[in-house]
Length: 417
Image (cartoon, rainbow, N blue to C red; front, side, top):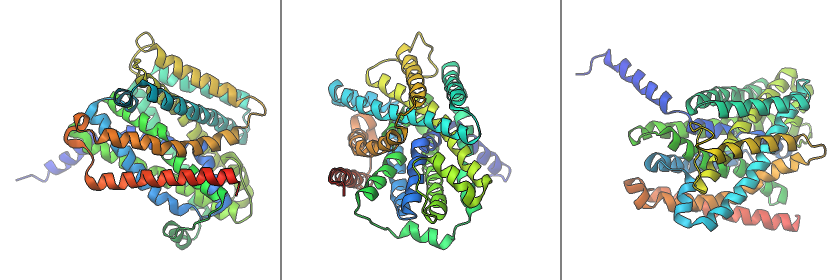
């Protein structure tokens, strides 16, 4: 017979285990709401109202499924995704994939420092101060910290994403209209709508996320017996990122879209909100942009360094020193330095770089998803932990749909319709 006193102890033990395992899923998902993501969601709400809100439900479900697969591979194999791709598909194909990821990730890194600069300007801080200081801080955080200390800082940063749901509460949109928009799809055949839809998919399920989460799970050495808790971490991250993204779309739809205000960046949205709903909501939006940009400016170079080093068999990891993993730290430093410097160049078309990097993410996603599905169903690597039939049907169908959307996006863009 189980005593009453043992139940609280058992519950506390489970909570303690979850807190020990928690990190890779929630951190990866929240970083996805970076400057490029916030810009994409702000544009979606300002330019299309609630017309694209329905897409967040299938995108969230797909995000959870995809991240669960790489999370499972990281726990079962103890290896990163790019390492597995190289071993299974060869160096030449891996090199091409890594080159595309490097281009899109560098565009995202530039966007993060542009977001830091823009958010700082809203608070009266010049970019020549905020960008170098923040670049130095994120570099010191990773190069001087351990995996455990860095993860704690990242988890604290996740808390500040509450700024966006709070903005929605301050705007107080009609609940019935919002609920209807989630379940009532609105299709628009125009090129702008299709490209924006693909941008939402690409920024919510960015290819770097799969590589980073599997690498961080492998470095954290999560055991198979704790996989259930690790999966809960992944699912929670998926719901949180969707809540933040949906909040941005809703906030911009019920303010900027109703007033006919179009925006190019999340910073534009923060400024435009002030005369409509007050300084407090505008500053909350701007603070969220600063936190998201600073957070992602740490993670994206880190993710890229993990991915490239694994792909080419170089040592990587925060817990290793420079002598053990020189390529890892050189890549990380170069991405931060070049991203910060490029973001400060006058006339650099950062808005276009920011948005189109999300669209390219969407075009690249089905390719990465095919690799993931082939690897996760390899019983030699995964044993009995391969996908079930229903799981495979849903994921292969999603990959096929993404290919069709990507083709439609390219055709519509080329036609300019």
